[in-house]
Image (cartoon, rainbow, N blue to C red):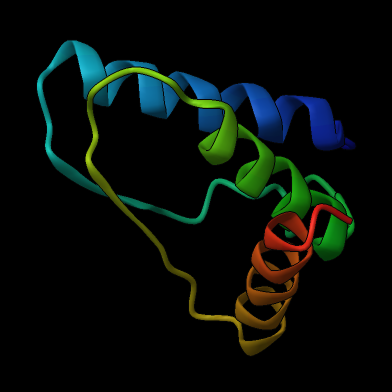
Amino acid sequence: MVIGAENVRRAARAALIAADRNNFKVIRDPRIHGTDLGNVPIDEAARAIVEEVRAHRRPNPETIYLVDTSEDMIAALEDALRNAQANL
């Protein structure tokens, strides 16, 4: 089963919209990345999530924690954040 990075993006967007609708001030992004069963490359999943967080323009959530138990995914998220800040 392959879900693709676009579905990871849609899931991240849906979580952010739901948080706004429910007035959640703080959320954490759980393991929705699709890198296990969906075979989405870790770097693509991380980039999709970071891009959705950066594109989110609604007032809530105010704070978003990107978490994972995989050191590889954590490193990929950190890289995606650094690249986004550098506009790469």
